Image (cartoon, rainbow, N blue to C red; front, side, top):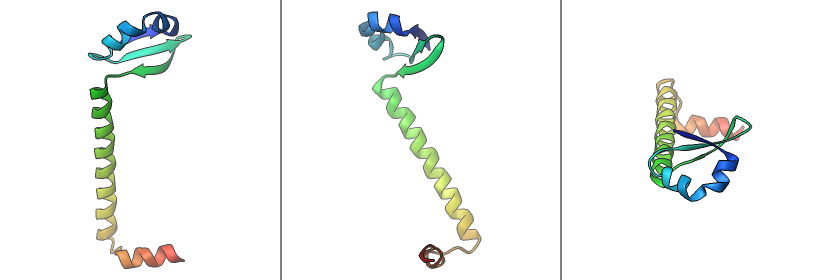
Length: 81
């Protein structure tokens, strides 16, 4: 990952956009990370992982609920209270 200051990012935006196609570029202001430039491919990959992880979490919760005897009818009853 490449790290650059905000001033450098303002001056060299075009070259950083090119660099972000092959690796993330972290933009820092006063030595604090404030933004990351990613290629669309990398961004889509990260989004896909988050969606997949969330779906796996939901599946585990659903399996645990079913194993505990929670049915859709019982859930509806609980939510209507």
